[in-house]
Image (cartoon, rainbow, N blue to C red; front, side):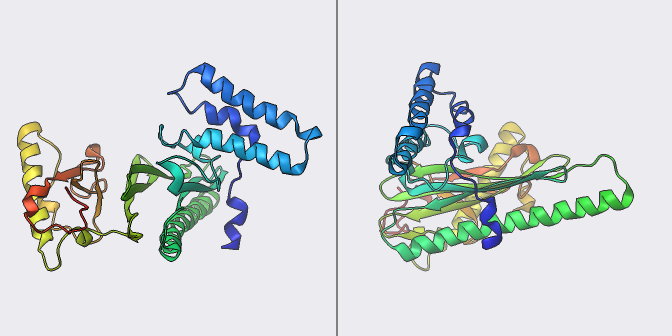
Length: 304
């Protein structure tokens, strides 16, 4: 992992203007107050000890971090919220690291979510390792593609070419007393953008990563039930709105299929772009009503 250490960004006061500019939900007065508090603290460096400086920067970081649960985390904001413990009912489990590399052959911007606060530290390490390995795999692949672009352009004498543009970000979907759900989305831009996503659902009470089978009683054929619901919903949407679904392309879900449990306790199945529909449909989501499962849902009460 050492070769990535120099790519991990650090929180810096020089970027405070960029951070607050990405918070449109708040008034200029509030944002100016945030900037002023930050600047007053940094201006006292000459007369304060190193211990006081560190405490001031941490306070400024937390002032910015508290807004994460209220706005979507975008590239400019997430780039500066790094390795800082954050506060609140929503954001105290997830922080961000970032790997970024830019030149004329590549624009790589990788956010790495990390879970904090699980009771089982070993499970927490395992989940965070999965998240980090995914990010590094995306980064390595983007770097490999950019090298091919560089070789081709130099070999063939291209004066203009499309750089490798890859962005990975995450979005918090749900953080309740019992479940933390978020998705990690990778966007690759060539002639057009293409998105893929991995969804993660964590049982906070039992400190474990959930898969679909965790939601049902053992030996229950939830796959057939969900498959039928998805096909039915696709056909209904096609008849009603001429939606761009391809029912014939859909075969079956499995235990690796993307899903999350929404705030109403309903199972939501998610597909990547082009997987079962035309590109303009984005990543289709299907809400499965819990009633179709009868008495076969887990006693742990994930679904309602």
